[in-house]
Image (cartoon, rainbow, N blue to C red):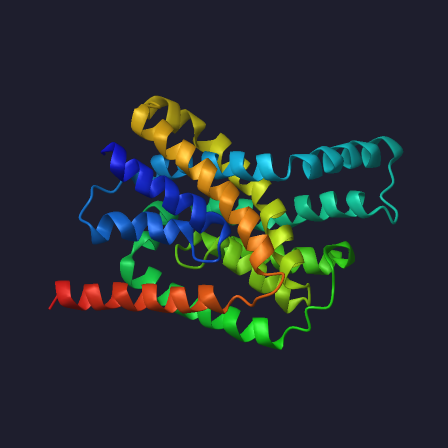
Length: 268
């Protein structure tokens, strides 16, 4: 892999992880479209460490507050009506389905799920779901109003993101909108929820990453993933304060159609 390819894939990961457009789909399709060697799942996970750094950098004040609330709830054995205590426990609970599915279907994620046909179909289908839900949701609830049922539904939706093209952020944002969270709160909860799942995946794969070696291309990819992940969080939160998710729906549709057209041309 060249430095340029690593930079491109780092940017792709940074943008795709937090925008509802599926980073995993892009990490499969971009090398496939340009006939690059597939960097493999270990490199993908290394890039995910970059987006973990990005979400930690952006939300560091939130996470310090949430971690304090978590330990306070343990020491006092009480959650009560404290918003931060409820939120940190909801994040932990919502992380369970994604972690379980990721563990059970790890081999499929590395093989059959990385199929361009499946990715293209899921890009288009999930874009349509986001388009529909974004219009039907009342979008009346701030994140402070999230419930246990809301967090479980959002957590279950995150589990489907093991299929490239679904999009972890796309699935969780869509589920949060379906539960009537406002657009900014849906994105913010999605980003906070990404932290345990990305950290967990990184810890499970850290041995493979270290064995393969963190060379200059991997480090470059991580740096660009961190930078563009941070920027995508910052500007998406501003964007959805005044606009819908339509831009990303249209992008998903165009991307999926390009992949389908390329498949048809290559195999006919």
